[in-house]
Image 1 (cartoon, one colour):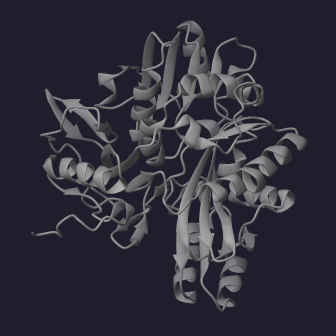
Image 2 (spheres, rainbow, N blue to C red; image 1 turned 60 degrees about the vertical axis):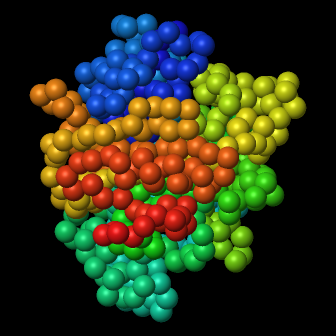
Length: 436
């Protein structure tokens, strides 16, 4: 079969890399791909912002399976455009994708389903939002309601910061239409964790629990980014906690969505805060996490294509029953190894940054190391930077310490002007500080 991955980042490179290993797959395309996806796929010139265009390409080129990477095409209804065709597509419908494209909608679903989360208020009037934050006596989180590429979230310790966040989102329109409405939440304290579940509308299978590091600076300082690194499995998440998340977060949401006539098929990503009162959902994403999936797929010992086909066809529950697998038993489908992903970014990210910097000394793939490209392209026979997040250096090892040491050694060897990366992914403390 032919498979097509939609997107251009590190997530899409990782998905193409894993899909290409499937015995079912004879050809992989990546639209539009990047400078690294050409090693495992054929880059395809395709405007994936047009849902009908994507579906038409899949039909015209006999693409049996299309996997949607980014959230924006899902929010635009790319999965709906495949309706009436035999070509399969992995991802939620436009209505189901509101779990990410509308933070208010996600909160409403969580409240109705009894999913643990923080208290919140939503506002479409900036003056009302401003008056609300001025009355708050404790830290709040101000979020653009719509899609803002992971950057429209402000953790505000005081009123001045909260007022600035409201003003930036709703008045300055820093995130465009995503800021038509804001969601203001009570601030949760604890350790973050990510749970990714492949879902078929009623049943699910959880992948290795992971953790990403969203802030640009060490010690989780500075502005949020799309993600500066990830580890899997997350040592803060034990088997009992995964089972709790399966039973009290993923399953209730699937039931709620199905009852509302919008069954959820695809990957449901629950971003959690592990508080003293137990896990609470910070947000839902409706696609594979980036960079979480870069750390998760190297550990997956079953065919990802099989899992996605089962989900599309509503057969996960039947599969689970046949093999005696509980939805939360991620260890049975994963290796015993540990994985770490370190993101190399352009200087200035997540703000403005320069492009076109030559990249050299990228190590060849080996059993314990693979570099997934994100913001790269080929120009004049050279590999150059073309985005904020440039490369994802992913390593595996018998221990997390081993995986991190391997990833950081490789990250240090790669060269491009303005290279920057966090040196504390996974709590890593063995790497020498800057300047040493």
